[in-house]
Structure formats: structure tokens, C-alpha cells
Image (tube, rainbow, N blue to C red):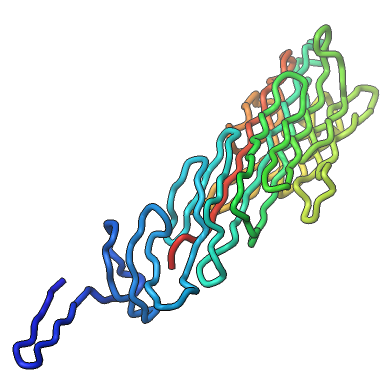
Length: 319
């Protein structure tokens, strides 16, 4: 930056850096100024509020959503708030149409538990149903107000239970349904997968009976938050848990798989959420992905936990 005084016309003027939006300084400091040739606008850097902001003589300046809460990261011109546990999203500035005044939301509930079996008389092959994935929902262009929004993260299921709902901004996604179980004592036989965001896998009930798969999209949302679990169509096997993109697969030989999850790039990277639990691997659902727990290894007592849910919020904070 130079301050040049012309000896001939006695006029002072200030020379500042110029360049397109794509070559802004990689490590700007507060108060730094430049002329953006892409937007034909003078701008300054305010890290605590908006990042790069236009300087105008108009009252209708460019304004952006300003908020706190969760773990905050940036992805280009966007801020991302990730909630791994329940907390508040607090909006202090709602922005305007010239900048941004809406947010994007990813809302995933906790996954259901995978089933097991303590019955040892069926050739060592009996498996429970996979747990259903937590409900998966996305929203775009949600207009916020200057307010505090409670983000509630659904827990993954433990024992014989469904996952818990995740809620935020007046929306909800439904916890995944538990997979079917065949046991004794504290785990009584239940050959039925439970309903949920995605349904739990059913289980072979003997005497050529398929059992019952759990139904997905319990919240009756459009688009659907999840799919049905799979069935056991022969032998002593369980069906896979439903996922957010596909139903759990039916199982004849113990190879039933969980329904596919859904890839999302809201945080700047592709991450797959809300996959259904597989059959017989005893793999717990991944935390903060909303995955269903896989069913337990053959003829093994005990449920397998589902994964907890997550909420992610994204909005533009600079041009």
C-alpha cells in the first residue's frame, strides 16, 4: 500500500491491492482492504463478523448470517457448524438477500441396535436382524431469525431399543428401528424388526416363517427419511437393517446386508450417513453417522449398539 503525493497537482490518493475474488489473501488480517475486480467493489476483512465485506455508500450493505454454536469450520465462502452432541445454535445477525439470510441443514437421528441370538440348537448359524439407520433429512434455504435454536442429537440405541430422534429448527428425524432378536431371559424372542427412520431387519421365526421386517420412514416425510429392513427368507438368518438410500437386503444364507447410506458434502468433504446394520458381524454403528448396529455373531447373546446422530448447519459468510 502506498500514499502518493503528486508534486504537480498537490492531490493525495491511496493505492490499495486489486485482484479477483479467487485470489484474496490466504491469511487476511482484520481491517485489511482491497478492490475486488470480480465484483467491482471495495472490500475489507472482518473475521469476527462476516469475513470479506463490501464497502458502500448505501444503507443496503451486503450482510451475512452470523452465528455461534457447535464446532465451527470454513469451506471456501461458507461456515459450517457441526453438532456432535446437543447444544444451541445462536443467530446474532440474520443477514440479507444481498449476502445470505438462509442456511442449509443436515439432520440425522441415532441408529437402531442390531439383534442377536442365544439359541444354540440351530447348527450354530442363527443370526439376528441388523439395526435400522437413523432418519436422514436435509433442508436448504431455511430462513433464520435472530434467535437461539436448540440442537438435540439423537443417541444410538443400546440393548433392545430404537435409536433416538434428532431435532432442530422445528424439524425432526426419527431414530432407527431395532433389529429382530431370538433369545431367552432378559432378551425374550422377538422375530420382528422394529419400525423407525429406517426399519430393523426381521429374523427367521422357524417353521418356514419369515418373521417381520421393520418399516422405514416412520415420520411419513417426503422425501422419505429411510427405508425398510430386510427379511430372513430361509434358514436361521436375519435381514439387514434399512438405510437412508435403500432397504436392507433379505437373507437366505446369512449374507443379508444393511441398506446403503447417503453421501453428503455439507461440511466440504463427502461423508456417508445413515447406513443400515449388516448381518452377523457384530459391528457397532459409527458414532455421529446414524448407522444401525450390525446383528451379533451367530448364536451370540446381546444387542449391538447403533451409532449416534448428528446435525450440521452451513451458510455463506462472504462473497
